[in-house]
Length: 179
Ligand SMILES: [Fe+2]
Image: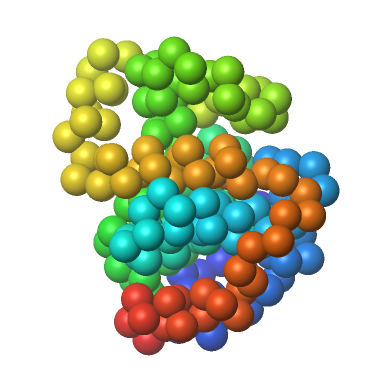
């Protein structure tokens, strides 16, 4: 798959999100990639109402799906947005894969909540974490917010659910964008 250039400005990012609105989600039946991101952002509005930056990261977390393989899509998405949206949003996008592995390893109830597709991709993404990997995750500055994003991700797979649309999020995207 070709690797696009990191987004140079917010208009390029918004155009990419609009394209995701015409791309079926690879994580859930009956949703577009954009629907899934919008539902994730909406879940984070409930879980972390004061953290708009985290909510934006939720909207953007699967940008890498359309450009990379399942195992690498967190890092790929982070690379696309780091210059434009800043370190914290990029780190949160990258963390959504290790956060899943962390929760599977440390929360006995979490694995039961994973969708069938999410269980299938878990092995590709490295499966359970080692003790050293758990400790490394605990040392991540945005690790706790990354867990919130991951839980929202799992709760963002409902076909037909009505949530705020892309237009609602455009001011927040512009608030955090550097260009
Ligand atoms: Fe996702």
